[in-house]
Image 1 (cartoon, rainbow over the protein chains, first blue to last red):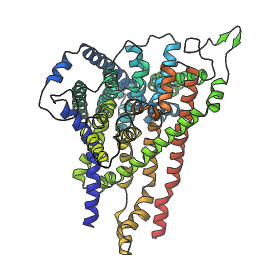
Image 2: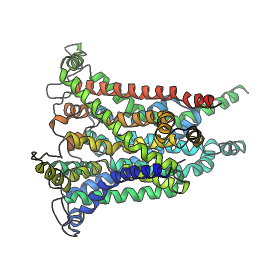
Image 3: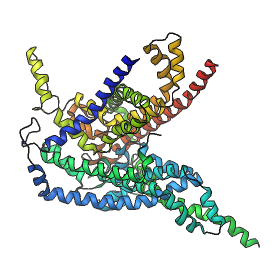
Length: 257
Length: 308
């Protein structure tokens, strides 16, 4: 019995190593005093210094932030509505439209939105990217909010209605505060998904607009430089911080059951 | 009296539409309509300078099956499609082999460590997709330790050095890496519900560890396996960035051809045909996985019946 557990432990440890060693290498080499990502030479912060003086990179980071803030704000409102609608009214068409963008390969949404925007003579840029990001973020927010509603006592809202509260007031003072952890977790999730998105942005950004993932893509297509390691490490740090906040707000988000 | 009762009856419906309407309208506009436009585009003629030719020309409606005919007549596209299915299938199998011990360990571990171990599987998934691809670019780099070791050993046997980067091997490893969490999660959710008493009973009756796994745990875990396979296979089928960054020219998959049709060749109708074929394949597989999983839900009860 113990022997079998040991085998399982070894196999699982190999699995965890497979997951983490690559990311660990990226972070370590971001501090490496060598242009080649090949062997450890010495410690330096030069690549971070270069990064903060790279105008293209800073502009791309600004664009990413602007898009992520807009997309997460709008998709949180629409996604919360969708979550409530799915829970209360079991809206079938909405359910398909909410889940389909998540279920199909990303490239399909990217190219169909490209055709759509170009046919409407809509200039590709920050706005088209934000509109595209909202489309796939709605589903994730809706799923988190609906999960929160499922664990909630719906009779509280009914009680408020019986006591004479208008539907809006019942929502504003009873339902919304109760589902707030889910809403915030959904918003943080939408922000992370938007700032990390590459495929859909790739098709909807047009030639002039660059976001952080697009900038990383063009850099690694040309050459592997530790500057990419530095920006990657910072992005990982940001994502980790957002996940920790989300899990503090809504512990159920990361719980196994 | 009458008007009042009507308003009372319509009020919940108004509330329903106030909540359902905005997200529904948004998703219809930015998801359903673009998808339908793509279906329409697949029946049109490519424009002289890329994009689409005018829909109405000389009073004629421009709709034809040319791009579909091209897809079915030029075997290169069927071959690329087959290659994509092959890569996605290999990715699914390797993910399953790696995910099973991880999911089993998490399911077996105590409450205290379970959340942490599960979180450790999900966490890399939240780091940027390109960073995870880039990490393998470093690992497989021509000057990195791995390539030097491998080629050192090969040279010892008198073999020519092989490049690790820009190879099918690099593409496959990265595909597995990126999709692994999607296999672990449903598998864990299934394994966690298993009844330990079944395994104990099998052991009492003389089944060894392998028999207990192969005849009890594995069949019972099939719904989780199918769910995980769908979550890995479908996105892996449409991937373009990994072959684009880590692969050589012969690793071009269906996603790369779609990207090329839309951004380089600018033959939108043909790109749309390829996208539609990919959509149909993805939906068909998702439906198949759902059907098979539903069919297998009968298994636990049949086991229960066998126990009785």
